[in-house]
Image 1: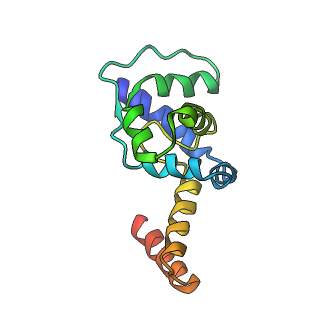
Image 2: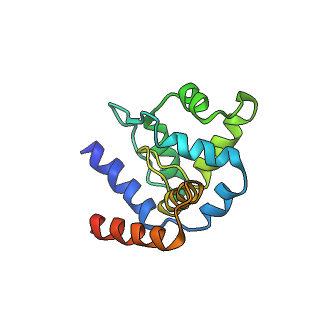
Image 3: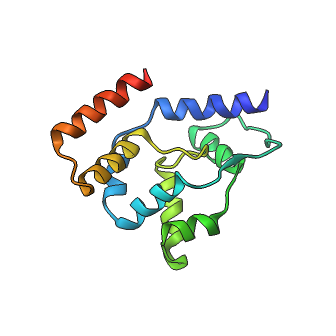
Length: 140
C-alpha cells in the first residue's frame, strides 16, 4: 500500500515534467556530472514510509525525497564535484525536479544527456535521428 502511494505521487510529477530543466543542466558542467552520476547511484525507497501529509505539491515532493535512501558521498565521488559545491548543486537539481527519487531523471534531461554523448562520440545527426526512432519504437 505504501509503495503504491510513493509510486503514484512520483508518477504525477513525471507526467508534469517540464523541458526547462534542460536549461539548468546545460548551464553548468557540474549539473551534467551529477545528473549522469545519478543514473549510476543506488537509490532505494525507505523500508517504512513516513506518513504523507495532504499538502501542497512542494510538500509531496519533499515527502518523496524524505523516503529515499542513497549515498551522497558515493554520488559526490562519482560526479567529481567538490564537496564545497556538491550539496548546493544537488539541492538545486532536486528542487528543479531534474533528479527523481527513484534513481531516474527528467526525461528531457535524459534525452539531452544522450544526445550530448552521441555528439561526443561523433555520431552524425542522421544516425542520431535513426537511433531516436528505434528507441521510441522499442519503448512503445
